[in-house]
Structure formats: C-alpha cells, structure tokens
Amino acid sequence: CGDYAGTPVLFLQIILYEEEMIMENRKPLTWSEYRKTLNLSPQDEAEIELEKNVIIAIATARAQQGLTQKQLAEKCGLSQSVIARLERSTHSPQMSTVLRVLKPLGYTIAVVPDSPTPGGRL
Image 1: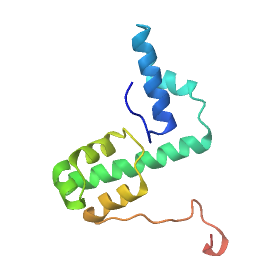
Image 2 (image 1 turned 60 degrees about the horizontal axis):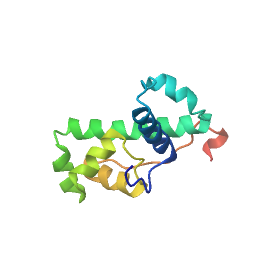
Image 3 (image 1 turned 135 degrees about the horizontal axis):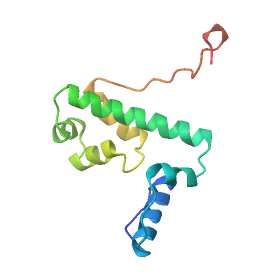
Image 4 (image 1 turned 90 degrees about the vertical axis):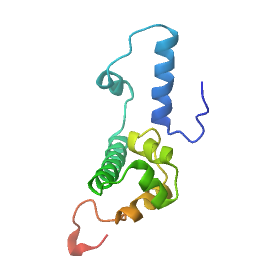
C-alpha cells in the first residue's frame, strides 16, 4: 500500500479493489462491471465527466501547440510528472494546478450557467 493522502475517494476505491484482486489472485472485473458496483450518483457522474472534459481539453491544447509535457511543465512552473499525472487522471487536480496549466496554453476557466435561465441571470 502506498501513500494515498489527498487521493479522491473514487480513486481510493479503485486502488483498494485492484489490491484485493491481486491478493486474492482473482480476475478483475472490466471497468464497466466495476463502475456499476460504485453506485455513483448523478452528481458524481457529472463531476467525473466535467473533470474528464477539462483534462482532455488540456491534453488536446498541449498537443495542438506542439508542446511536450516537459515543455508545458517548464512554462507553468510544474514538474513533468505533474503534467503526466494530470493527463492520466491519476488524481483529481486542484483548481490552482488546472489554472497554472491553462494559462501558458492561452486558456482559462469560465463559470457559465449549466442551462439558460430567464433574463440571462444566475
């Protein structure tokens, strides 16, 4: 077992599941089979989808700009391993990390209504 401080609960569940399968020498479930056992709420699903979309957008922007992970890391004052973990979705990134990575790519985060509201107000 490693040091999992700061690791989101979903990832901890996956890590513990993988360790259990290894220790019991059992064939692991497919991701689809395992995901069903997590009993994720619609809110959980929405958060996962949003995080995934942000991470994909970061990796896509980096690739489109022809930057390596190391080059992007240097531009935003992080290590290459932080960029690699971000792109692999190993951990849920902190907002400050996302903002640091987005800035040299020429992007930022905007808060917009999920669905239009009357009069355009929140």
